[in-house]
Image (cartoon, rainbow over all chains, first blue to last red; front, side):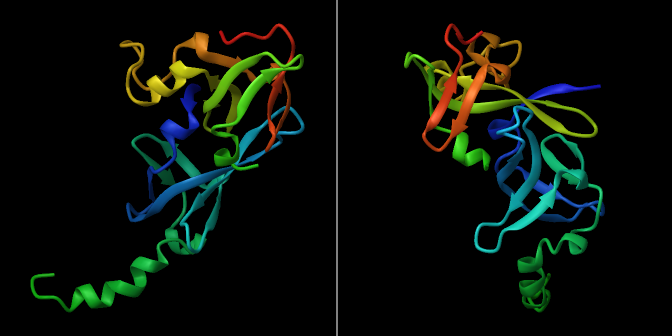
Length: 95
Length: 89
């Protein structure tokens, strides 16, 4: 089963969600492999602008309104920015 | 090559006839891979990205705006060159 997708419209800026439902960044760019060979495929998602994490396409489970991963964010070192600020938010009242 | 490197590139034929710019990259999504099949080119590509598209398929450009990847001779930072006689379909 396959379906067409426009990569910029259908993937860029989409939320990345790991296998536990944790939001772990947005797709900032895609790495295409095989462009010179005439059989290009999406090889990696590039997540994060300041510290870019390369997520292999093999780790993608499905694509809908978000990009769902087969693995936990920590295995790919994703979402570490959230980890740093989480203790601060945990101290806030009603958090 | 990054997707962002392709977006916005000029598309022309080998003899220099301009076809437009790359506004998106069409791929076929399967459970195993996302294989690139074509380029969304031309001014309508811009309108499609802004939401003025075929009402039956709002998310995708009309098929006549697609240049098949099999027609691409070269794609690099200088632009995309396709075979002579290629027209968006």
